[in-house]
Image 1 (cartoon, protein in one colour):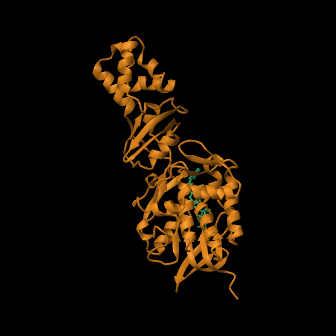
Image 2 (image 1 turned 180 degrees about the vertical axis):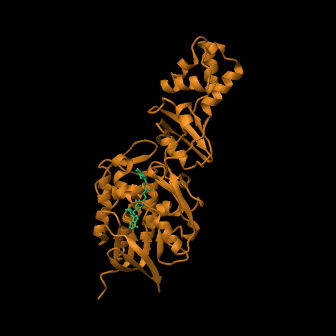
Image 3 (image 1 turned 120 degrees about the horizontal axis):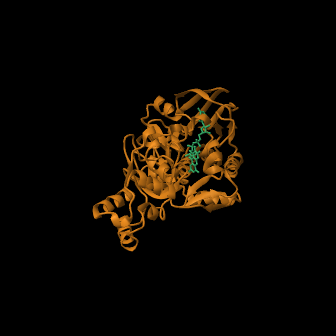
Length: 396
Ligand code: FDA
């Protein structure tokens, strides 16, 4: 008779990747246990996308993922695509809408996605244990033994799907990397990504004073990253999708370069206005293309405000440059407290890109955010969780 606590596959973490992996492994007839220290499954799915879960993106491409090895994610993303997830949703009678930039949201809201994944698991006879943490993992003769808060569990395959450390108040931690270290696997330490920027007091009381709440479409660049989305001024710095996106490319001490008139030729525009409306003040014409408070603030701090006819060519040129390449140096970020995801994770050189199995430790898998693959904002991170979980679920 088989011991109750012996499984073919144990998956640590009933989040996005873990649920997908469990359902797939269960469908293959594997005896699967899904174990989570939380009191319910899929907590990050439930709070995602403002409760509507931005579950994938129509424009998924490997270029939308950051990793020390940008090629690693290609295989999994090609094998399990956004269309595959849409097929699953159709099967469960769920519908969706595109909000912007290919971002798909669930019409029936986030709990319906969790319910769908759990139904898949239940139909595949996956066992679930909540409120269960593990203390130790040992590995002998091809078997993993976990000492958990609910007793000992043995398994042939162990899948680490414990996510990243962003939002620690939800119980998130770097436990996945600790397991990797225990097995001698290299990792890239986690750091916050998709996170708002903070600025120091002199900047907040100077240049950025009175702008909290103002939002405007911009182009922003830093390192190899460039995004055209909205920027939001906050009481502590800068946020909004443009800033969250570029935060993944930012490093301490670096500036971000902001184009307040993306897709426009600021100099040509100012020169034309100078001829047409020489008596109009700069702040008046800027307020026609930028939020009023921002236009005022720029003319109080960065540019002298005059009737357009009074600017010389050089000054006009420098104003145009500042409008299209405004450099701001954040003091830092809001950190893991509010980061949507984390950069870093298990070094992809340690894993098979096809199966997510550790090369040095047969039977040990890492999926989702525990792996050094981090997507852009907009459904890319869930798609990675689904794809990596699906791949491991085919073989674990
Ligand atoms: P995930 O975090 O989903 O799951 C990890 C699981 O492991 C959790 O259930 C946790 O309780 C469990 N666990 C942790 N430690 C454990 C332990 N010691 N023992 C047992 N279990 C343990 N992405 C996106 O594509 N679209 C979106 O709209 C959003 N929105 C969003 C909003 C907010 C506020 C956040 C914080 C994040 C997002 N994301 C997102 C990112 C997305 O949530 C994230 O990329 C995935 O949830 C990662 O899936 P994983 O399965 O890897 O981890």
